[in-house]
Length: 290
Image (cartoon, rainbow, N blue to C red; front, side, top):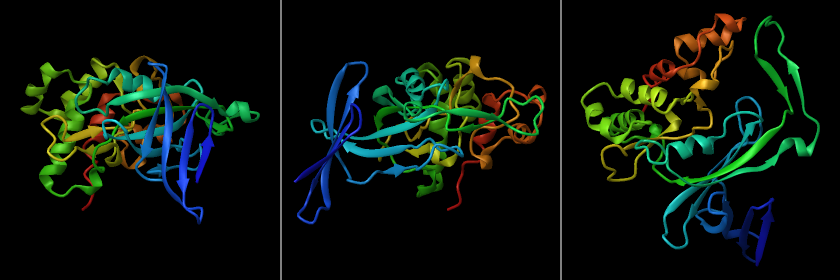
């Protein structure tokens, strides 16, 4: 017996047994660039990861582990919501398709639906901040998008040796938006500084969300440059859009000193902009306890 969930251009279909329990399934998604729909096999009938709300830093993210029926390649399908007007993760991933050390996107769906179509949206100003751009969002419109990306190993918390941990951090940070001609010299210099500097100067982008869950271990036997992979570019921002703000983005455990001061400031004008130096400082912290 088959049961399906059709959610506007998306079809998830399960096969169930006589007791009504899911046994296997498929997920269909549309490639925005090729204008073609492809159906993947679900590696598990349950989501790999899911969030239940669109507040407190959550983006209602749902991730499915899938398998290409032809190549048998293991992939991840990620659905997430972004605030209206915010940069989309797929735009950052498009720029990073040929970049070593950054997760590779296979396909994407740009604007699948918006929350404003479900009800009324409002914005209430934050209190106690005379000149702050910080606001409290109450049911503001969010836009959902989907990306299909390569699957790698677990995140840094699951390293099995000190060497594996250090190699993963080096490759994820040093490879970020660094073109291949620079890769060899980075190996023999300061990887964190050069890698994130290339992200800032050449990619004109700041990741803004460095932490131990956003660096994955590479696949078994991965070569130099792919032993660690940087993921989650949904917080990344083009340099041209970054402004002074009395607030901080990212996980508070990985805030730089500057971002910590921004988080408690009361005036935008006194706050330095988030730049690659904050990400470099954050990269010093992601070695998890073992």
